[in-house]
Image (cartoon, rainbow, N blue to C red; front, side):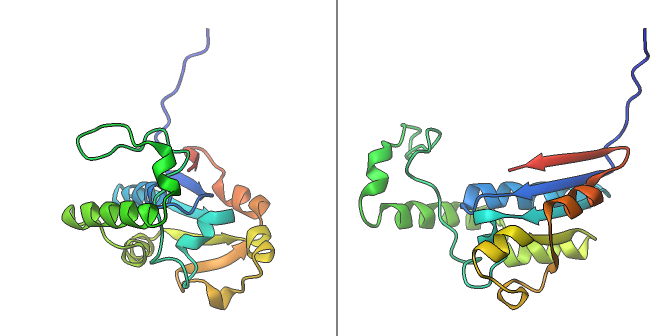
Length: 167
């Protein structure tokens, strides 16, 4: 029988592929937690996750109201997904979410990126998605170190004690 060796996590590589508040913040919270714990953290934004690092959209993220079975109304009742189709509902739900985050002193995206990079975390954009959405480096926040391929990101993510997390 082989003895299992505990290996502590030393590095996290986080891939953020969705641009909703809940998905972007999941990636940011995990990356910030990693740097606060002294781990190496690299975050790769791809597809609609690019909204989190695109200057034009990073402060305008929304909550997914349609097709989100975990969405709850105040009081814990399930959110009828069809309500999300009514004009203004998604904006209202997103404003409520931001309000709750403000009450908990959760920083806005740009401030979170400041904290992550100040702690040594690294932010990357996906070349394929940047090309697909016809973006350039100047369209992205200055926190972005480089625009790279997923293969390049995987090469950075390896090593003993490494974890890849997809949000």
